[in-house]
Amino acid sequence: MTHVVELSVEPRDVIGKSSKKLGREDGIPGVVYGPKFEATPVTVDRRVFERFMHEASVGSTLVDLTIEGRDKPVDVIIKEIRRDVLKGTVEHIDFWAVDMSETIQTTVAITFVGSAEGERAGGVLMHAARELRIEARPKDLPEHVEVDVSALEIGESLTVADIAAPKGVTFLDDPETTLASVAAPAAEEVEEEAAEGIEPGEVPEVGKESEAAEAEAE
Image 1 (tube, helix red, strand yellow):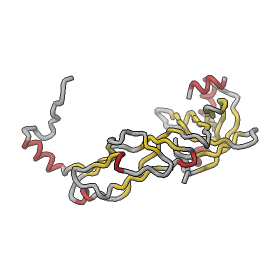
Image 2 (cartoon, helix red, strand yellow):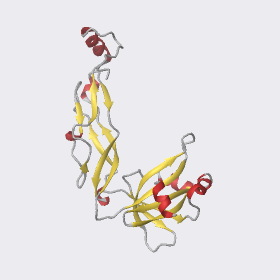
Image 3 (cartoon, helix red, strand yellow):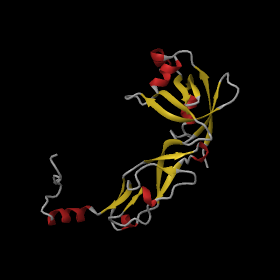
């Protein structure tokens, strides 16, 4: 079931480079846009948005967005959040207005569940991916995709092809993409390297060989 949350924003008059000042204050500049929605600059209260993000996820949460002055809310997802590289604070938000009758492509987080059999034998569980690219109608967006690693033995791996897509969802990643695997215990790896004539620790050589939306809004 799609996770839906509500958020209220205000129209923004300050656009372009001047909006950076707004981002240093209590408001966060953003823009709402989409194939059938005219780009609209908005501002979000920083404290409200920080609380909101405890319930929402980028790309996978359907947002009932109320824009002050408009008659009805807009169905959107958070397409991108840009942050200050040093401080980590939110500088800008892109809201993507969706058509509830059409599919969209986005990414959702992977939640690994279970304890792998290979771990109990001394192996190390490796997570090779943290998210999946999917296509679905907004009403079918999963908050996350669960991947059960319980049956994995040492030397085995799980790929996209090994997991079932939720109802209404299509995986877009290559079916052979590895999601998780269980590596052999370190001691065994050292023994194998020695047997192959490779010094432990030596790596064998395998070969030598949203701004556009802001501009539209202006």
